[in-house]
Length: 269
Image (cartoon, rainbow, N blue to C red; front, side, top):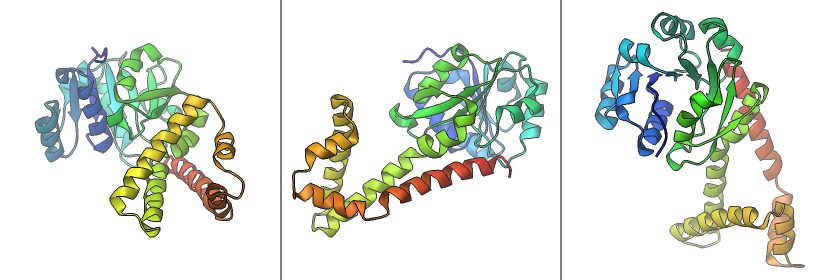
């Protein structure tokens, strides 16, 4: 159960906002304290019907009473109009939480005013598990105490310097994508080798979870565990030799850098 007694209003009821709301409610947040405004009335009706939160197209009451206001629109949406609505309707001391990729604290301050507490959050998509780090940067008026119960209701938190946000997004927040892709490829390899797909998938997941636990339990570097696992001229070292001759490592690194660059581009679109 989370210690969340603040009123939270979401501007934008898309997939990420829904995932956060779902995690909050799973952690026993009071649905009466959660309101949503979305321009799509069907989306509002869905959120109300599915989660019991108050959602409607205008939501001025929820916005006016909120202690935390979550901006959950797309980077290309009209953020200046959203900001004007917040200035006109919200309490001056309400903390603004932006989950909009690529939009900086300075940009938000220019729209909302430099004296408002503003928090920039890039949520991890693992909200339903309570795992995965969200990257968080605060402006000088925001405090961890004001937002941490909310942030930890949908996962773990890393407070970082804003200059690291784009790198954190492309690497850490997009991280599950790389893992899913690896598992898919690993399972395909098992099928190629002759294993039934369901068996290959079960073994892949067990190896992944076990290997992560082994790293945590042993405190060893991955290279040390590779050295332990690979006997001279054995099966494992032959497999690693083939992997070393592929583009696996460089391809993964290029993927991360591409994701980081795309995060930076979003701010300019």
